[in-house]
Image 1 (cartoon, rainbow, N blue to C red):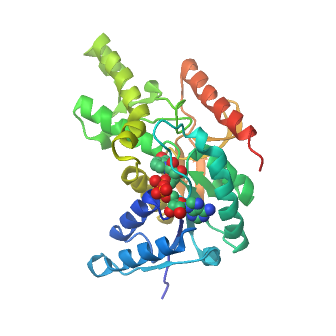
Image 2 (cartoon, protein in one colour):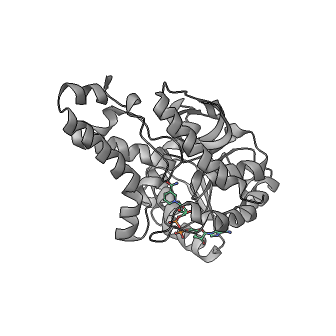
Image 3 (spheres, protein in one colour):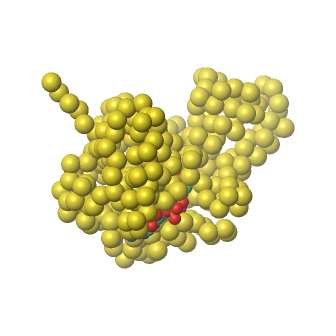
Length: 316
Ligand code: NAD
């Protein structure tokens, strides 16, 4: 009899981490879920609360407040620990505070003998993913950030709403930094297999193109609007992490816009940025190079230059 046990360690049991954990319980995502937080009492309370839902869950799961030594035989470590974005604060301003947090987390995880895959959600996520890559010394394929997965989901939702189609039939991506320099390569955005640019040309004309600008703007400012209304965003990102974990644990070869280490994409190497990637049990199997227009390539390179600039300012 082969028992394929799946173990996930979550570090950071705040709003984002627990939105992921709650969804993980409801989706019977794994057999063992370990919760770690600097605030051990909080992690313990969260574990108790989730355990009290087990009787109503789809399958049994071992859930407990743990220690870094528990990462030893984990398949995936999800890092959501960090300081949250304040009203009006940019993600990049969070950087230096969160680098110190990561130092105290990544080193004991590596010391535990962990050999699995890191998924990072902490902001600024592209830089924190690169920090985790540097601190861990892991293969780049095994260190990935949530990148622009959530932004891409927002794009699909808003485009679907405008053109009155199911967001799952919108095919397109937000790429680059998860932040102010992210952008929508409209030349690569389709409804079914029809480009939205040709739909606009054939139907709405100027008004339709104006709507695309409005949509890209709405995607970019979604997080700030939610933070202004309810102080933080967490359900959407919790589900984005679930989606990435499923692609890894089920060896799906799914394409998701995670943040991964560029390897000569449009001449960029070393920087971590959101691009469509094939995700499977190996982590990032490969990056899909899109046929961007020269204007879109310039936007991507601009985004990478911002990410490089901030990363270069950190002492690791
Ligand atoms: P939160 O404040 O609710 O939770 C953060 C948790 O991290 C707290 O429980 C805290 O005790 C813990 N923590 C802090 N320092 C720690 C340490 N050294 N070791 C272990 N645990 C530590 O914040 P949140 O709303 O859950 O957000 C978490 C992170 O996720 C933030 O950086 C936020 O900006 C980011 N975020 C990312 C996305 C995305 O798309 N990638 C979306 C939303 C939020």
